[in-house]
Length: 55
Image 1: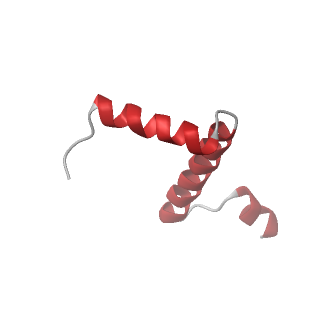
Image 2: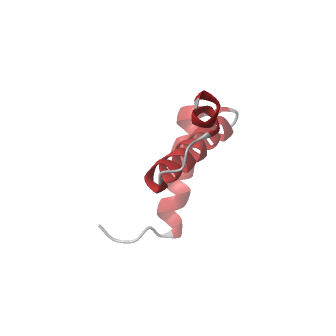
Image 3: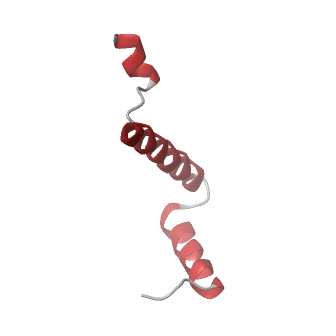
């Protein structure tokens, strides 16, 4: 697979807008960002706020 060009990125954004609509995309990105942050913290071995409260 090659690198993504501007045309491919625009096409992906248009398809996402058609599937999810403009209001749902920020929620999806927020959830994705949270998941990535939790994954990074877990891979570093850091406890999350919920884990700290239980200890």
